[in-house]
Length: 455
Image (cartoon, rainbow, N blue to C red):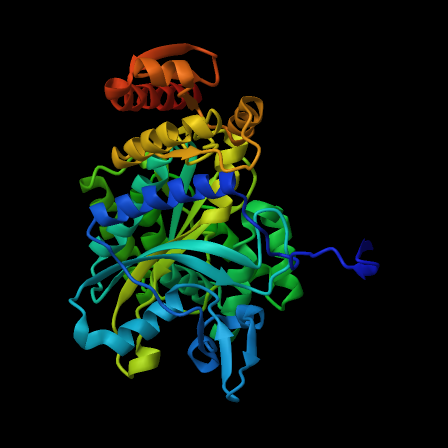
């Protein structure tokens, strides 16, 4: 334990599952968020914001067994409150609160942190950011197709190379349980087991079903269905034959046929989506198509989940309003970007450091940095009390500032500015009146060459 003024001082710690984000990391996060915002808005989604805290009864009764992960407490007014677990349930409450102020179908995006009392591990934190896009007020499968297209375009915009959006339907999952003769009360056991098919294989899923009271015959009938693979139209036709006469199956198959048709008409790249009959999605509020974005490398799990939830808003209104949406996890996306080196890692927001040569040169340096800022160039002067040139260059190097501008006595007398490219040491001198444009061109050149090197 450290000492301060003779007293022991406990080193400060961050709560487990939480983390600080340093400036360079934050710049990358902001780049991804701003990219997603542009894609969402290109599709007509509009931003909203909801409180971090909700009344606890707003959050409970929607997440099934995951409800135990909600952070909750009694506030100073004696109210039971909870921290939002996701952005979907707050959206449902938001729509119920403001329904008469919104235009339907209502398309919203929401990018903010959520909180879960989960067990921390790689790619999983107790505070993390979700990037959501939802469409409320239409049951059309075209809305679900557009949600998938937003995902495809958003992930493509950050150069995610190997993602696939897995698609299934909750009604197909329910119909498979009925086909196997499993009572509705036990169907959730089957759903939880088959959702692990990719992780533990057929034998592991079958064993889990048997341990939960599913007969061997029923387990095999379900597994024979969920392991069907191939072109979506072919697989759905086979399911229609095998599940003939089951109303839930017919409804789910019809929805997915329509959904895949829309994806084709929207020119979605088939390499980025597939039918996955083992995809279950754990949240209780899903009612129709469900989606999950996965990457093959690195082995980090899902990038995000999505689906249709036609009854969730009705829990606050007493009447259903259909809705569908998608949620991407920012932390896992950032992890993939860094592991695969997909995007340039920004070092700093500063484009140029304007150096100061003693008190006699201070006025010229401050005047020049003001010109740069007025031209939209991110510029700073060294604010340390000891302003020798070596210390200023160390500051620029440590911070990763790409350019330095020198206004020494000789430059000031000649009406010139000396500019250095920090990475290469390249230097040139330009008249003060041309320096702003020259630095702007040089900044663009360095930025573009750095980006090209990462492609």
